[in-house]
Image (cartoon, rainbow, N blue to C red; front, side, top):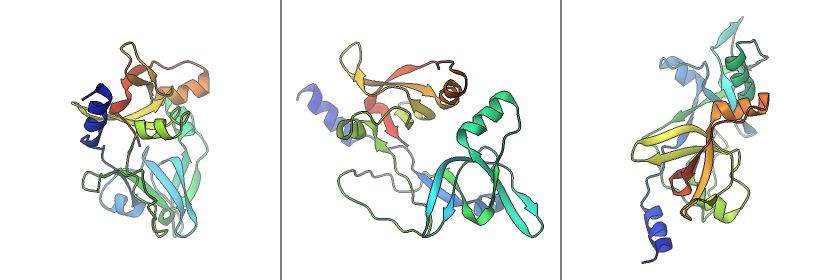
Length: 204
């Protein structure tokens, strides 16, 4: 068995990270969950969904319950600089919270088309970074990643390079912590990065 054959065999037996299951914000609130800083999605069933957002504590205006929602970059800026930033007020029934679920299906398949219902945002199952790098070079940089290994899952990572050859010839990707990745865009200060074997990375 060659090294490439072994890598392919090992990849088949890797356990994917837990999928992201969108949960209605009202469900999260009623179960005691916290919306401040949570990754959220907004949208309308049958129409579509918007991701890349963060939520804040629900407010009430008369009979309406609203969730302040802001772009993720603005969330990080507000946290970093301790400033007030603009947040859209979205009706609570149009907000879903991205929840990491250990009970949902973890199987991945990039070989066939899977159709979803438009009644609610779909569960997002992680895809091996190797699959994306092999199918569409140039598509990793900036993507949200999960690293899996002996220490479990590490989230909150962004790819800052594409797959490249490491010192020993193994494929790897340099990653940064997400808050540093956003700081890079806002201030120009390059983030600390580290090389991770691509076999340990999944696109969230």
